[in-house]
Picture 1 (cartoon, rainbow, N blue to C red):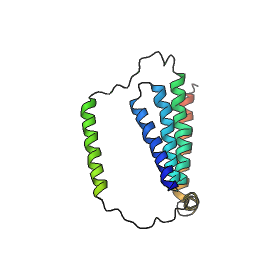
Picture 2 (spheres, rainbow, N blue to C red):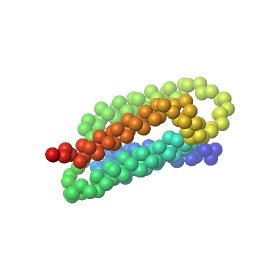
Picture 3 (tube, rainbow, N blue to C red):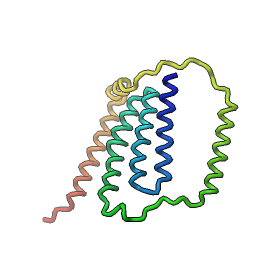
Picture 4 (cartoon, one colour):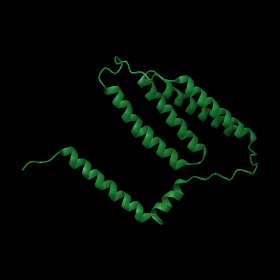
Length: 165
């Protein structure tokens, strides 16, 4: 029962904050709402025992992409004075489509015969992924690291510009 309550809390946080991202008139509020959306998704990953995906969600999306987005928004000169709006055009047709889809989804959920088999034991995935990276997938893992190193060297070369002799 506690697991259902925790799931409901994380799902509500994710859905409400995603709605705020989509419908907020202020870009700063949208960016901060995206933070709660990413945290809610990471919490759902934790509940699924997908600890690697949860850590990746936090490190890459919250720690990298969202922080970069927030710095971009905050460092933009006079962002509060610009009339940036997220006006929804043709809201009525979109609402009709969404309500029709929600109705069909509700009917499908109601009519489905859900199995009552016991839930298997959820085990963490990080150790298994690490073992696979260092055994079966060692060569593709090393090739990916070389490709990333090449991209990094290329980015440094482009950023420095051409040296004139």
